[in-house]
Length: 497
Image (cartoon, rainbow, N blue to C red; front, side, top):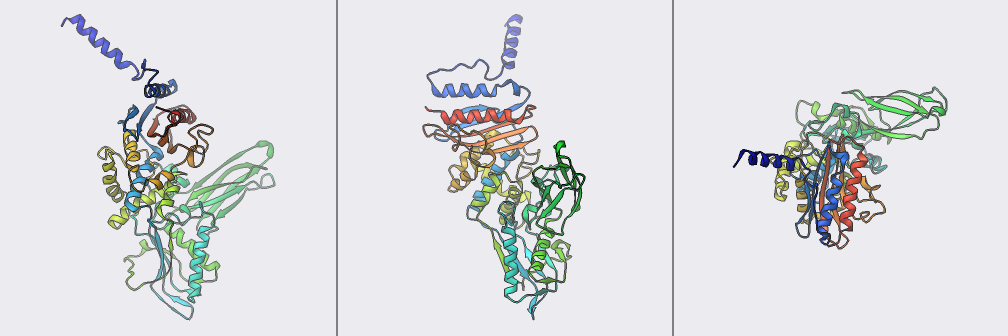
């Protein structure tokens, strides 16, 4: 080979390597699949994302055919698409009918209306003892427990109210969670015993008088938190609504800062608590006292005892059984609830190994995911919910999960847990008025510079597709990424062979 020909070949190779993988793509207009592939490729060539990364895989569940692929085996931060890994593996490991049971037991005896001993709340990891998604449910549960105690004659508890959270380990946060998140509801502490999503809900409204502090009310109305109100009400003409919340690390002192104009609508902010176990038993104590049962002792975390609590001779006084996992998974996926997801991920480890932890959760999830074709060797499963920026997955992994779940007996409750375009969940306002509305069932994901959408869509002639579309490191408005994802979903919904 001559030197000139060698340099020609090198230059030609470099020229083609520098081109976009879809630049100049030709297709047969009479071939509907080729036309669809071309139209999809054009969406991901959007120049606004030239400095970003798209990872995409779309496959037919009917034929197994790859409709479109782009960086499908590259690693991406998934954000809340990580919930697909957790919720699917839990559906297989626990089953749709799995329920949590939280028990109220005592190590004492009742004599003349007095419980001579402690009242112990034994956690199971249940995330659903919560009033935030089912108003009033928590109060009813604790009030029912109080009524149960009164029915057996208990009017006074001489001992303590103890919270036993030892079904989980003591890692309260996911790996890689930012310290900046600690006040925010989406980073609530993880615990074997939990209440109200381990948050208090603070309602704030402006005063009717300029310079007065704003009005704050807390739900549940508990002494467990200390609210420091540093707000002020300003004139209506200022049109200010600049309120922010800060819980000091390691405490339950919540500072509320900022200004709010007269006439602004009240709003509710959920703020996390420190030590959910003690928070839970404090809430129970307060309800018991409100129902006329006096408590002479205090509230205690079982971890504060030198010895492990023994239940050999304990007596169960009451219990709470959750809804089945087929319902719990809807709260994981439709509103994209981090707390529920983290609790469930540790639960699958608890059920297999006796204690809930990330390591035990992974030990249960990985074999299930691997059977579906997920590359668990390269997978980085840092937390259950996707809040961590250490999570790394591929679009191919997600499509493998969605394809694998479609063959499981428990597919229907999994499918029904996903947000529905234009109808509910995190995509209730997307794809409205298109053929994708009511059709696309898909999980969203969003953290800084990440927007993902993965799920199922059915074509106009009944062919079901599974897809994953993930954008990383974009610096344009998030709506621009959503516009591309939505457009592709509509193309798939409109498609006919």
